[in-house]
Length: 325
Image (cartoon, rainbow, N blue to C red; front, side, top):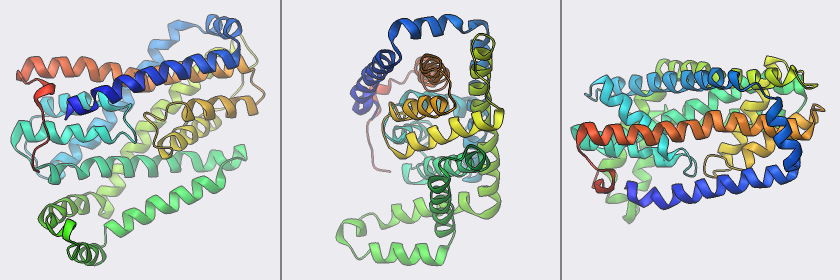
């Protein structure tokens, strides 16, 4: 399964390099280098710490779901599995994170149909929390209100539909009449039973609260980047606006379903900063710095954790192949 995504990861890295080059040309390479020189890099580890806080909180949510589904695994192994999947952060829609389910199956035999819905619950609560973080800033900033409201309605409605056993079992029954789905009815029921436990009111609320704090950490990281630039440039952005810009850009990048939101997220980060009359070179520099501190930092952690996991378990990711859930 890992081998299947290896080429896609390498292609995404190459695409990321092209995105960096394109934005460098757009901002004028000489001016962009000058902008990077204005940034006090002693603050960069602080920004990374806020990204790390995001990962720790999201792990807490992952392990909360693990406990909720009564999947037996030690916290350390659970952490290694969670972080290893970060290597898939640059897969379209982050669906490569289903790798976590394959690793759980290797570790304790948990069926993929039981654990894979955790990824769906993670993404659903992430989306809802980002919408909540963005909504106030959208009206203050005066941009993106319609998209955020529509996204909020779609994601909350999805959660409500999934929490209705009557409706969902009716839909599964209809799908069971289709030959293709009829072969997998048991697995679909198992998957639904898992997602149902995670979208009931209290677990859903807990997941959204954890996600809101987690993503706010990266918003604070972005605010710090902008605040550092304020010492040498005409950059003044409030925490509320910084939260909106980062959250909205992340949301649009995720909806675009591109690997890691590459290109789209950077474009919206840069564009919204330019709307605030921030110089083009500073806008691009701030956008690239926060993307390195969030997306590419996560990929780096994933790569390191993969090697640690392989050494501890003596399992090679290349040997993890798709099996029946």
